[in-house]
Amino acid sequence: MSFLSASILLFLVMDPFGNMPLFLCVLKEVPPEKRQRVIARELLIALLVLFVFLFTGPHLLKILQVSESSLRIAGGIILFLIAIKMIFGQTEELLQGTPDGEPFIVPLAIPAIAGPSAVATILLIVGQEPARWPEWALSLFLAWVSSAIILLLSSKLDRIFGDKGLNAIERLMGLVLTTVSVEMLLQGLRLFFDNNKV
Image (cartoon, rainbow, N blue to C red; front, side, top):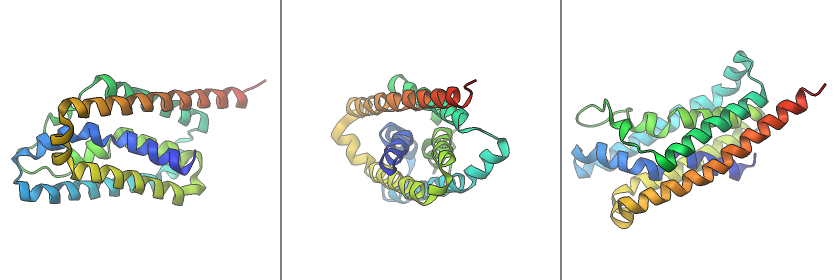
């Protein structure tokens, strides 16, 4: 996987356009002058969580004795399910259990940004080539910065695109992610059969 493809994949999985309605809904009770600070704080918490998994991922996979083919197949399936949800699903279920007042960590940092899908993708990327961790760290940071800009501008973008526009963008991103997930699944299957040839 190249640096650029890893960055794009992580950006798609973080799904900033899909998370915008969630951020706007959760933060509607927060005073407007304080919203940017809350979003920035939640983004930084999410980045910290993702970097923890970036650095501990290879050791975790080694302990679990997960093969590269299994990792690719599992990653393809997970990304495919995420893509289907982006195309047909909604983000409202993440609001269940949201505490009143200002959100802290849940649900914006986790699971909206640093959710199971983002963590699984990081484990998948770094697990294939752990020696390239500086490259993966930079791609994670680039994807995070791109997502952060979109989410910090969420109020303005919502006025520009509206609900229909944001839904269309999220579905388009889901379609792109579908093709990535299928390719990853096929790579995993090819690797498995190559390694198990009699």
